[in-house]
Image 1 (cartoon, helix red, strand yellow):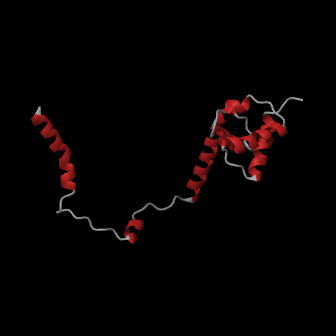
Image 2 (cartoon, rainbow, N blue to C red):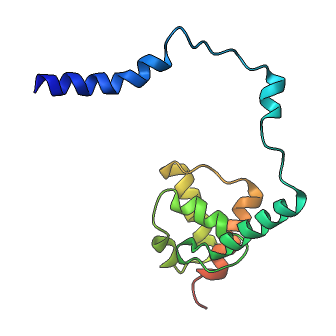
Image 3 (cartoon, helix red, strand yellow):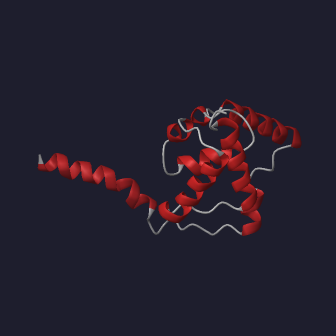
Length: 134
């Protein structure tokens, strides 16, 4: 058993010992050479294809069932940071109540305040999709 353990340790240490040997000193690569060895930027058409792929992947993203519309991404990020989006989706509140809820979350629950344009986007999304029926 001891021989097996010693042999295992020797085999594990061998690559480390040979890689760190004094015989093989690495010379630093000047910045100009290291930059030259990096791949060149992708052509513009590949960049456009990447953007189209990213947009298509975003369209395929579920957003936990939030309906499409302006503000969906902001609601997803803001609300799901603290709780399930099912909590949002089961609400039917007036604009005034949604405003109160967001204020309460900032004041009492430690939510980061939204900047005015983002706040309006979130509120408008919520009242479009989760409003008290008239």
